[in-house]
Structure formats: C-alpha cells, structure tokens
Image (cartoon, rainbow, N blue to C red; front, top):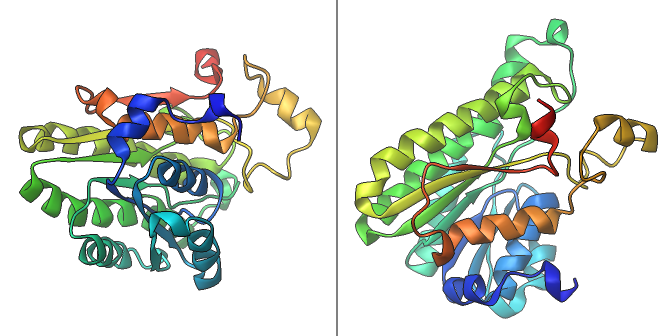
Length: 257
C-alpha cells in the first residue's frame, strides 16, 4: 500500500500497543482494519468463523502478536465469549470494531421471518453482545473506543441488499448513539462508520454497467483501506472529543439521497 493510504503519524502513535478486537476481520473491510492496526503497532484480535482464514491473517500479522478468535456469529451468543477470550489474552481491551456481518439481495416479498432473524443475529445481536462484554471492561478501565460498521443502507431504503439488511444496520446506528450517551461518563466513546459501495466480495460480481449506474459522485467504489483509515481515526486520540457520531464514507453517494 502506498504511503498516502496509511494512517497519519498522530493516529498511528496513539494506537501503538493498544489492544483492539476486530470482528469479521478475515476479509474485506475488517481485514483491512486489522492490517492497518497492525501497521500502527496495535495488538489485534483477528476474528472469523473459519479457523484456516483466521490462521492465515494471523500469520501475516505475526509481528504484532495477533490473538486468533474463531467463532461463527450465526450464534450471536458466541460474540461475548470472543471478547472475553481477547481480554483474557491481552489483559485489557482498548478498542472494539464490530465489523462482522453480511447480507444478500432479496425482494421484500421474498423475506420470511427466519431470514429476517438470521440477518439480525449476525449484524445486530452479535454486535450487541460483543459490545456489552467489551463495555464491562472499558468501564472498569475508564477508557475505550467502540466503532460499529454500519452502512449507507442504514439511513434510507435498502436499495441493494434488502429490508432485513437495512433494518439491522439502522438498529446498529441507534445502538451506537444510545450507548454513546450512557458510556460517556465512563470515558468510553462509541461511534459508527457508514460505508457506501466498497471493493469487497459482496460487490465483486457487479458489472461495469451496474457500477456506473450507482451514481457515486467520486465515480468509483472505495478501497477497504479507505474505510479502515476512518475507523483508525475514530479509535485514536485524534477523535477524543467525538462520540455518538456516524461518519459517512461513501464517495458522496449520500448526497443523492
């Protein structure tokens, strides 16, 4: 990665030796966040449902002594256990990034309750339980930063990934703001990032015509690293007076409504 795409020196310095768990960090945006944190000298928790993929990312980040955390958040109760595992390994938790999640395009008429609940389990309930577990330790430390990866879909109709995905991400935004207000007195900050269209597995199948039809003002999809750098800013000292905020990183797409 070229130097301009890396975290600025102030952000990097404020994250050195911090213990940060990133859920859903074996691919896409989560993996980019884990890699950028490692470059800053943070101790990173790498989470995924595949032991092989977790091991592969940990091997790449070996210099920062990553903590492997394997769990399938289709059972959201495992999210709290992952946080506890990370805290047991590091002795603390300075940051939590809730990035695990996913979705699949489906028409509203094709949604059933089982599908709705499955989406909410991974995208919202796992984030809730991971956040609760981290918050217990952060309150005791009287420090910590939580960043939730929401989506542009949280702020309007789910035009690309369906009502279940949009609603789960809207819930994540609401949870972010509710906890931010409660946690501020314990010096714990909670913010969210709402990406637009990003070059990940979820968008890889789109044709050039479909990409152009999205109408992004900056005329391209984001690289995962560009989302990661905003997350690092929200974890670091440069954002020490920010809480309850939702940062849109979407190439201006939100401006089109």
